[in-house]
Length: 311
Ligand SMILES: Nc1ncnc2c1ncn2[C@@H]1O[C@H](COP(=O)(O)OP(=O)(O)OP(=O)(O)O)[C@@H](O)[C@H]1O
Image (cartoon, rainbow, N blue to C red):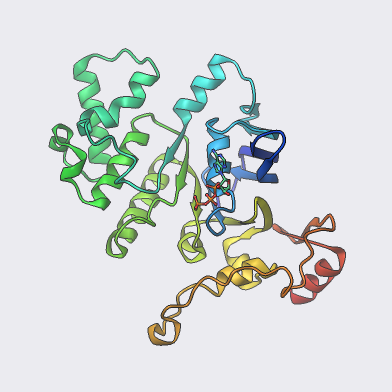
């Protein structure tokens, strides 16, 4: 974590509701967290818990039904000026899960990587545009000559690098990486994570790193938020969370981490959170409390008392 904690992003009481007025479905239910400049904030939870919806709400793809998103001290959710909209498009970029699906098959890499510049209405000379594509490709460890090829000519890892180059060309400050390695071969996942860490150090980038697997976010994240059914259940520094996982859902997610013994743990599935079994009441308005510095957890008064005893 950087020493001077400058708040870059503030998500406050965020709500996102889909469906109709008669049949609303709340995908994100009052989520609040801050992200500091230069840090990696991991957001973890099982499929359908609302992680992607939060990312998409931040970059203004999903409309926000309540709460606010503030970036560099300016509200960027809801109705904003064109100037703010342009800043969000340029400074906040998203990297997607499936590099096979997220790149336009019919376009050359050259176009794919520089597409964001067109969207921004940047009037660059052809020479400058090509130079920027070449630089973005080499920044992610790809040859500039790859610009004239099509996505299907590349492996999954290379395609994810193209996805990262497409973000970098915009010179972003904040990148939302939505499961950036889960569709990749296990053998190349570390390479993509290492590339992301290197780029972060070189450029002072800030990441929101979304994953369903705690073991993936553990080493890359400074702090981790655990999300369940659209609500933040626990938020703590990465080491803190692993040393003292308090919420039963966090503990359930942790138990799905593959252990060194491959025989004993083979086939172990994510333990589905069972409110009944864990005595967690979702009906009483739960409290969100900081039980030790930087370590927040949600629960009823009785549950919070129990968690205090676990520290
Ligand atoms: N545009 C939409 N319209 C209706 N429902 C949606 C929409 N987008 C997401 N949802 C629903 O909102 C819930 C949260 O989805 P979201 O994709 O944010 O979860 P997630 O935690 O990112 O899961 P995954 O890892 O599977 O993407 C899901 O039940 C999903 O079906």
